[in-house]
Length: 214
Image (cartoon, rainbow, N blue to C red; front, side, top):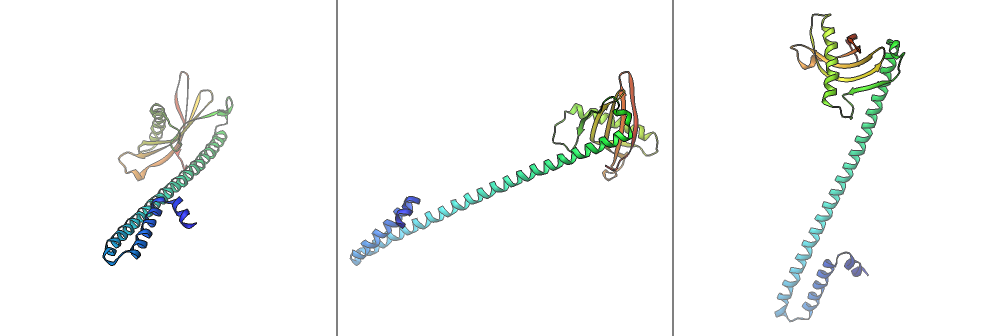
């Protein structure tokens, strides 16, 4: 019963074992003069059997390694999906909080429309065209120019973090961006918040720009 099971699982190994058994039986029946030749045959079969066993072990080890790699990759993918969901939830909550704050600071901005559209989010997985990024960065430059007029230290825009807009008597753009003093190191980068109002036949008007804690 055991030999039958081995034959089903690995016929090559079973064949080797049967050959060795035949040689051993023949060795017992042969004269001493022929026993050395038969012993060599048995030795060759044993060596082949050992090599096949080693190769099988290597293949099984490689298979287990590949399966482990696959499990690690799946686990990592699921963790990344969960992290991205948490980030999205955090961004959505932050966006709602900012909207509520803007509603308190500028109640008239919500008089005609309560819809706020997100123009840009640096931490979002969404893709934005270079043209859109340059547009929101130009808003940040307008805001920092107004900020520079009020003090001696001059700042330059480094990056835009978030930008959203809503309709009022024109369009109001809400910005969060980073800037640093001219001729300074990167560690001097500060975060700013700003609001810009503009409309048809109306110039850009910075209604708010200051250091921000967010």
